[in-house]
Amino acid sequence: MRVLSGIQPTGGLHLGNLLGAILRWVRMQDEAECLFFLADLHALTVDTDPAQLRANVREMAAALLASGIDPAKSVLFRQSAVPAHAELCWILNGTARMGWLNRMTQWKDKAGKNREGASVALFDYPVLQAADILLYRATHVPVGDDQKQHVELTRDIALKFNTDFDVDLFVPPEPYIGGGTAARVMSLRDGKSKMSKSDPSDMSRILLTDSDDDIAQKIRKAKTDPEPIPGSPNGLDERPEAKNLVGVYSVISGESVEAVLARFEGQGFGQFKPALAEALVGLIAPIRARLEDFRKDPGELDRLLAEGAERATEIAEPVLAQAKAATGLTG
Image 1: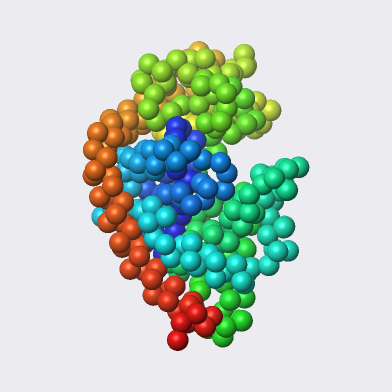
Image 2 (image 1 turned 90 degrees about the vertical axis):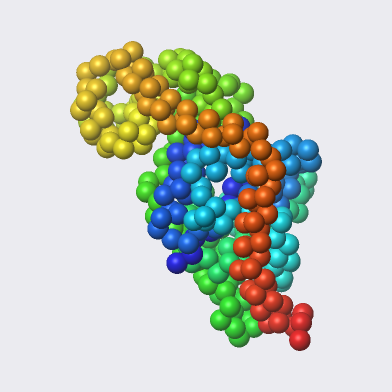
């Protein structure tokens, strides 16, 4: 069993990234062989600042390591440091079909009405994503609901390639549901919108670099409603901001939502918010300290990523070689 997942190197990692993906990755390390990569090639689907991209790769690597990704357990690397990703993507472009890509809802959402002005990379990135997965013969891919369609596309590409060239090379991957539940963390200003670094309000998100005081202030000012905390989850159904804060506390504390509600039932958010802030500080403060240590030593970050790229290349190169042989690119 081999698990693969990637994350685009963007600045400003926040609580939603941590609870929604990164801590799940940390738990996966004890369940399967894991490869995690910084998807800098995927970052080129939109306009990028070269210096910012380079800085973001290091920042993301530092955040992953600080959060618990262990290079002794997992392979952590920069996507572009393994050229086989781009090479296999081009080979698979001969297998993928325009109709398949046209049906990708992410393409429709991201391109919007300006499809003619979108980059070819934005249209084609699901094929690169397929190459990322198939290159390592990954059996499982942890994905959110918005990416399940891309895993299905990867399966279609794998099966068509194997059939077209009469080989048993690529492994059709399955979505991975291990690593525990991934939390869907919403904005602190709007319980109906996901927490995002693109939100213009800094008060909408908690960053991994926020101080203890910043965290406490953001929770104190988080949008809620005047109603007391209910005794059952049904009482949160029409209260998105309340549901979000209770859900975050549940994930951090390891308690069920029912247990959290039982403890705080009847109280207002004036009593609940300090407890949530304390739990958040307990989670983020150690990560922030480790993150600062890694930031001070970019050479060590580069060394760890280079080591990971070497290990990834050892797995990827034989698969790429077989793909080339199957298609007639090599003897």
